[in-house]
Image (tube, rainbow, N blue to C red; front, side, top):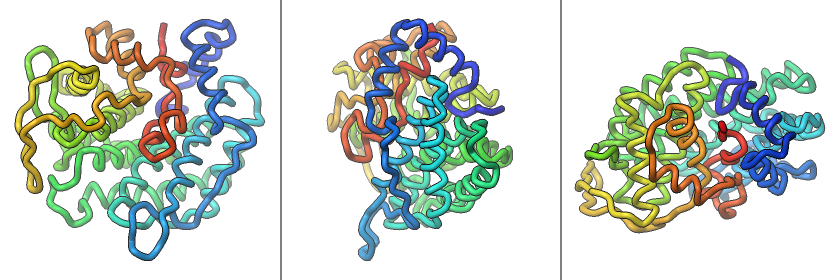
Length: 363
C-alpha cells in the first residue's frame, strides 16, 4: 500500500483537516515543523559520492551531510503534503535526485552499517511520501529506488546476515534494529515484498540482538521489559525504542501487527525505558554477552529526550485502549515533538524523524 511507511493518506487527511481548523495539539506540532530550518525552501542539500561514518584512517567523516539531508527531505515532504504547496515537494525531490545521482557507496569503520540502516530508513520514508508527486519524474524515482537497493539494502542484508564477521551477540541491538528498519522501508518503497518479509521475519526470529526476544530480553510483572542496552547507557536504550516504534508503525501500515507481537512486548520495553528515564526505579537483571557483563542499569544519559513517544502512546493508549502510564507521561513532557536538528546538532539528534505530535496524534 502506498503511501504506506510511517504515514498513510488517511493520516495526511486527518492532519490537514486538524491543522486547517487550528486544533491542538496538531497546530503546535505544525509550528514545530515549519520553524525547523530543514523544512525551509532555502535548505541547501549536500549530496556526496561516498558517505563515511567512522574512521577508516584514510577519509574524513562526512555523514552529517546525509543525516541533515534525510531530515530535510522528510520535513519538506511533510510540509508539502499538509500545506499542498508544490514548492516544498520540488525542493524535496531535487534533494533526493541529487543524492540518487551522486551516492555510490557508504564507507568508514563498522559504523558504516549504522549509516546504511538509520539513513536508509529515513530516506526511504521521505521518498514514500513523495512517490505520488507528479513533479517527480518516473525515471528519477526509479533511479532513487536503484540507489536504495544497490547502496543501502545490500549493506542492510549483509549486516544482518554476517554481522561484519563478529559473534552474533557482539553488536548492540540498535545496529540490528537500524538495518531492519531500513530493509523494511526499502522493501515498501521499491515494491519488493521479499525484502519487506525478510525484515519482518528478522524482527520476529532473527539471531542477533535486534530481534524482539533479544532486544526486550527480560520480562517482569507489571508490564515492564528490560531492554538489551539498559546496562550500557540510556541514549542508546532510547534509540532502541525509537527504532522499534518506527519498525512497528511501518509494518502496521502494511497490515502486520508487530506492536502486538508476543503480547505487546514492544510496549513492555517502552514502559521500562520510560519509567527509568522519568527518574523512577525499575528492576534489573545482570546482562551478559560475549563481550560484557553489566551488573546494574546504566545512569548515563538518564532522562534523554527524543521525539519518539507520540507514536507509541497513540497506538497503544489511544487506538488500542491499553494502559501505558510511563509512555503517556513521557509523551506529555516532550509534546509537541520536533524533528531533526531540534535535539542537538550531532547524529543522536537526527536518529529519529520526529514530528510525532503532528503526525501520530489521533484525537
